Structures are given as structure tokens and as C-alpha cells.
Amino acid sequence: MARSCDVAGRPCTLRRLEELMTHHSDHPRPGAAVTRTHRSPRAALGVAMLGFFVVALDSQVVNVALPTIRENLGGNLSGLQWVVTGYTLSFSALLLFGGTFSERIGAKRAYGVGMVVFVVASAMCGLAPNLPVLTAARVLQGVGAALVTPTSLALIRQEFTDAAARTRAIAYWAMGGSVAAAAGPILGGALAELDWRWIFYLNLPVGLLALLVLAFVSGSPRLVVPFDVTGQVSAVLALAAFTFAVIQGADLGYTSNPVLVAYVLTVIGAVVFWRSQARGAYPMVPLDLFRSRQVAVTLAAAFMGMVGFYGLVFAQSLYFQTGRGADALTTGLLFLPMTGLVAVLNPLAARTALRFGPVVPIVGGQLVMVAGLVALALTPSTARLWVVALLMVPVGVGGSFTVPPLTSMLLDAVPAERAGTASGVLNTARQVGGSLGVAAVGAVLASQADLITGQRIAMFALAAVVTVTAALSLTLRRPNL
Image 1 (spheres, helix red, strand yellow):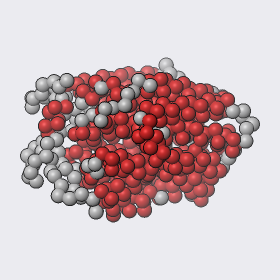
Image 2 (cartoon, rainbow, N blue to C red):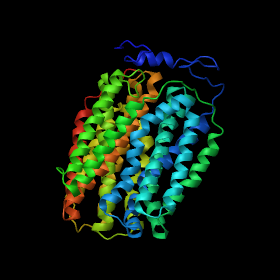
Image 3 (cartoon, rainbow, N blue to C red):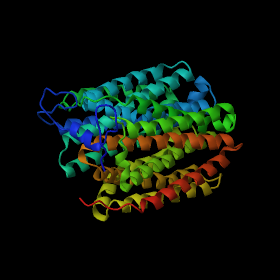
Image 4 (spheres, helix red, strand yellow):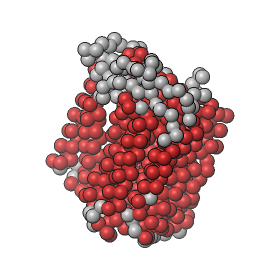
């Protein structure tokens, strides 16, 4: 499985990286890690939950405030999409860098840097005088989030050495994101009624609390390895160009020069990234990871699941407010049945996976998502808003049953020393899926003269994507532990 590697720049494999991950003394030479003297699992879990909460909150809270932001700052549908997509795109594009950065300076320090960046960017969002400045600040927020997310999981990994305890900790970590998803639309709607800028100021006390708790977390191992600059730059190029093409294609035409150039840049970036990972001495994503079918299928399922979920959130936010005339607060309340149950049912998903195996909740959850998406697509335009809100519940509940077992299956399929990289790749796949889900649904809506028609087309398309994902997930097998 492993290929040869040397310091002259020829391909480096998992074996070489595993050697570098070996812990040495407190005075490491290049490639060695610094060990810790004690553990602080409760503080680490608290920090991880706060970090995931604030990152997930900003993925949700802005959606319901988009019409209010447009009234105040102006802009078209494409510009509003970039307020959402700019955050998720920079977040997903830099998650792998965040993992590398974490390994080099230690998860604790990397988390601190990321949270500071996130808090500063949140203040900039609240003070933004126009849409371009807001979009730029949202991109910076994504940079901070890209450092916080992989390091939060790394802190859990380093502090919880027992597998059962680590599984429970991951469930609580996921609950932090679920609570944010439940609270986000309501907070966004309520704060938008007062002033949309408060949806960003809300991040400041949460971020400061996380930094305070971080002081009680023990130090993290540090690994001195070079950053994969070529891989990171080419990945950002490919992702940014592709998203631009999807969003702007509906307005400019998919055969227009700017969109065609974006597609060309996407291909170039993807090719350069793949070659850099195959030939680089220290690749961000060792390609040996993908030789496992379980890893490849798990990542694909995570990616397409987030396409469906975030595509739904974006479409329904505009549907409720623009198509049905609901205000921001009402829209937030309409999301509550879906997002609230997600937070409550996370522990049940873990217990289901332990009893019946992880494939059952994964495939079952995906099929429930499909049922909800099809029901929304078939719902008459005159249906009461509370009926539409209830039909959204299966999408959220189904999605909540897939995330914990997918994460567990991925980590079980890779060596323990590669768990950090695997977690980074998983989060990248999920965030890229969310970003492109928003972009694709936005393009569908913009291409239709009637919003209701566009919403139905988008729901059917998302249902088809998740159906394919369910069929693919049936090939997964419970790992032998």
C-alpha cells in the first residue's frame, strides 16, 4: 500500500507521515511532536462544543436575514448568495490548511488563532457599510471557522483516549452544532427585526467565552512539517472558480466568457491539486486514504447529504419570505420544528448505530430526507405555512441520523494517527457540499421566472441527489473493531 519517499521531494505516503507522528521528547527535532503531561477532557469538550456551535450558527443565522440585509445594503440575488457562499466557501476551502496548521503549532494554539480571527471578522460584519464589505468580512469569518473546526475535533481526539468516551464526546460535539442549527433561524429572525447587524455581534460573547475556557485545556502536540502550499492554493482556486460558474451561470449564461473561464480554472486547479497530492512530499490529503472503499463512500455520502440540507435551508428561507410574504421572525419559527428535533435526536442516532450498526441509521436517514424533499416539491403553493414547516421535519431528522455514524465509520476506517487528516477531509467534504448546495439551488431559482416553480425543481433535484447517496451507502459495511 505504501510507496517510497525521500527528502528530495518524491512521493510521501502514510507510512512516512506515521513515522513523523511518533512522539519524542519535549525538545523535538523537525518532524517530531511535543507530548503533554496531563489531560483536561471537560475543558476540551467545552471548547469544542462552543467552537462548533458558533461556526454552525453562522451557517444558519444569516439565511433568514437576507431580505433585511438586501433592503439595507442593496444588491441582487447573486450578491446575497455570496454573503452565504463566501463564508462556506472559504471555510471549506481552508479546512485542510486548518488541519495542517493545527499539526504544526498544536491544536490548542491553532484553535485560539482561529477563534480570534472569527471574532474580529464578526465585528467587521456587524460594522459593514455595504454588501461588498460584508461579503469580504464573511470570507474572513470562514477563514477563522476553518481553523476552529478541525482543531476542535483534534482537541477531543487528544483528550479522550478511550474509544467509548470519545464516541460520547463526539455526540456532544455534534449536539453543539445541532443546537446552533435550531437556534440560528430563530435568533436570525428575531435579531433581524431589531437590526440585522446583531446576528454578527452575537458571536462576540460566545467567542470570548471559548477563549476563556481554552486557557484550561492542556497543551497539544506540535509537528514540524512543511505546508502543502501548491495543494492548498490549487484547491482554493478550483472550489472558488466552480462556485462562481454555478452562481453566475444563471445570470450571465453558462456559455458566457466569464463562466467558461471559471470552468477552465476549475479543471486546472483540480488537476494541479491531484498531481500535487500524488507527488508531493507532504500532501494535505494522502491519496492512500481513498483506496479504502469505506472512506470514499463515507466522504461521498457526507458531501451529498450537505448538498441536500443546505440547499433546502437556502431555498426555504427565500420561499417563506419572498414567495409567501413571511417576515424574518416568522421564518425563523417555521424552521424550529425541523432544527429543534435534530438537536434532540442526536443521542438517539448514536444509540441506533450501536444497536443495529451504522449503515441502518445512515441509509434510513437518507431515505427519510428523500421523503421530505419530495413532499415539499409536491406541496401546493396555497398550503398553510405550518404544513410546509412540518414537511421540512423529515429532512432535518433524516440528516441528523447520518452525521454521527458517518463520522464514526470514517474514523474506524483509517489508522488512529491519521484521524486528524480524515476529520479534516470529512469536514471539507461536508462544507463543500453545503456551499455548492446553496450555489446550485440559487442558480436554479434565478433561472426560473417564478420562485415557486424554481423551489419545486430544486426540491426534486435535491431528492434525486440524496436517493443516489442512499443507494451508494448500502455498499458500506460495519467495520470489524
